[in-house]
Amino acid sequence: MTLQHRDGQRFRFDAGALCLELLLTGGPGPVASRYEVLDRVEGLLDWVRRCRLAPGPDLTVTPAELAAVRELRDALWRLALARAGGEGYDPGDLDLVNGAAAGAPLAALVRPDGTRAWAPGATGTRLLATVARDAVDLLTGPHADRVRVCGAADCFLVFADTSRPGRRRWCSMERCGNRHKVRAHRSRTRTEDEA
Picture 1 (cartoon, rainbow, N blue to C red):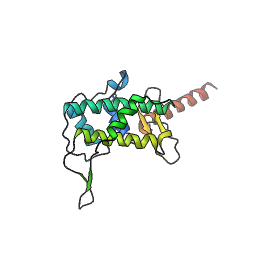
Picture 2 (cartoon, rainbow, N blue to C red):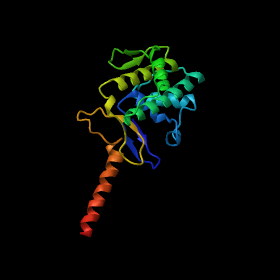
Picture 3 (cartoon, rainbow, N blue to C red):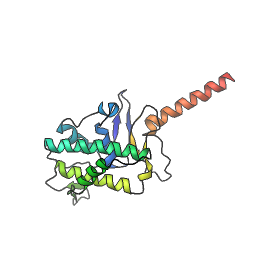
Picture 4 (tube, rainbow, N blue to C red):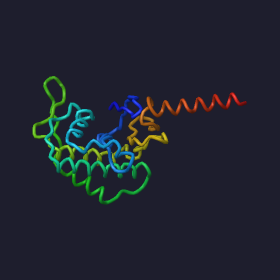
């Protein structure tokens, strides 16, 4: 996904999993809540058009389904941060994810031209099941130990490192990785000048 920081810089961010992309819609706590877009159905629909489901299905979302997506997203925040920190999971958050994952997911179709389409009847509940199943796959799969928070002190983006070597530290080399390199270079240059 392409993100835009508050300073105006645009950068590519690969969360590594659909469930972690949902965290970009806001969340609990003062940092994530500044970016809240799930306070209206249009915010959810915009996320569906931009996330890895794109082109997203034509969703019908009720206010109750929107509230359920928000609740799942907040649980995913807590689970992802617990995983990244090597802590245990909250049983209530697991119950929420497992309950949503038990529902029927969105159904993808292949068009004659080889592109993806979505079966009719896409609802917020089916989206919820799709995201929850992705979370189950992430938290029980080969990348579970690679759920990380960006290494920059002022960045809180969470991602699954799906790279082959598994050494990703930054949300994006364009953003935080580059800023780290510039700071390190300036520090080295300053030290050399003082010597």
